[in-house]
Length: 600
Image 1 (tube, rainbow, N blue to C red):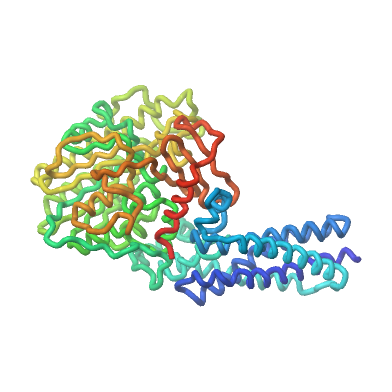
Image 2: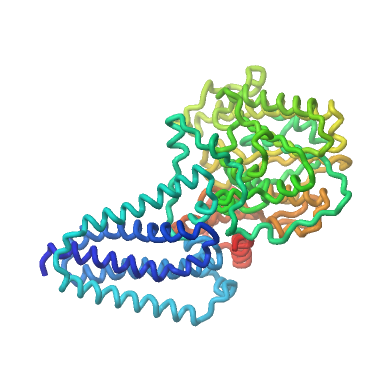
């Protein structure tokens, strides 16, 4: 055998496996609801890019590995694992609507997991037969190619053609993202390993702002991948409709709610229901705010974003005749709340641009803007107002009069932070919470001055917390400690006297509580994972999410990878020390059903 023909044999083997992948993966098209023409291009491009990567890896291996038997076994095993992964992924996606990963593996290996998926022993036999057949075919085909394949001179042209297909796919998707074409963007979740390409941030570096020409506020695509809500919401007629005000303080962790740090909110809380054991649905802004408005686990975020699907909460308020006013100190396009939570809110009703980078100035303008809006509005309709302060995020900004906790650092050098020098930074954070607390008090006083508290529900909370090395982490988005996930919840309802609750609650409970007040007759399970805060239901745990994983927080903390294919499920005690035990099987299987409840 001549070594120069190994490259040709490898290229032809890659091409044949590419064709096999296309055949095995055909069931994915049963999950495509729109953008059918593009889905074919994306499907071909997806597998082309994967096999191009295989070719780049196989080419040097084919030249290096000796003897031929070891080369053939190695290549056969690699491709058998790949095709088996696609085979299993099809079944995983069918049941969970996410691709094969550590979570799916844990469900399949958990006692009762196969039963919940209704998989029989026949499926196991079919899987084993598939693996043996592919392994044998790979070995014998590669053996034949190594013996018979002459030098192939069109290899470079074939690779260039494949790259052209992949490039075309990515550019079409990038343009769809710019123009908010949800029919195309929703396809990104269907095919395994598909990597969407976006260009908004890149264009922004050159002063090009696609969102100005193509507003984020769009309608849901024609054929959704979501089953949301599970049932259409029905409301009692003639119900008194209160005004609703949401006030979020970024990074407002649970122990910052105190008379020393947040006196305005603390004083107002004496008229409110206070939930002392409350958790955000995320340890960062995206998933915390998402859980508040949708009442869903954060892993749903990506699907709702791709389809620009608004929450039923906002749809319901719109149908009930509410006016809207949204104030945010940071632009609501990053995180993409205009494309999700406020996808159906008119641009004129959203204020998130203040012409300055100064957080203090933006937050002050935000509070004053809402008070002014309340003073000037003439409408007799009920209103929903949302306020999102930003000063306590990252830089921990405040005016000099709020420098109560000392010593403080003049600025935050993240590279030099450690447990030994964190106190001045922590004090700066507490001062920034005090600043935002004062602005919250300004809004409350504005509501009182207008006599609106007699018919206005007020919700005050945070999107997530902030840690200062209490458990070895700084900031948020790094772990699921109480400092990062637990937040205050102050819930004012006209006519309801002050009460403090110690039961476990979640951001996902806020929307069903309010919709119950508005006369919604549906069970909360029709549209979310939450429960009425004032009802008798008692939670055993809450779910908190981040980008690639979620945590079930109860007596202990179970961290479960959702996006990653390689990480394992880990369990921690409440001090975030790892435990050597598994998650309860029943809860694990219940979580798996929750993650697929609202997808088709």
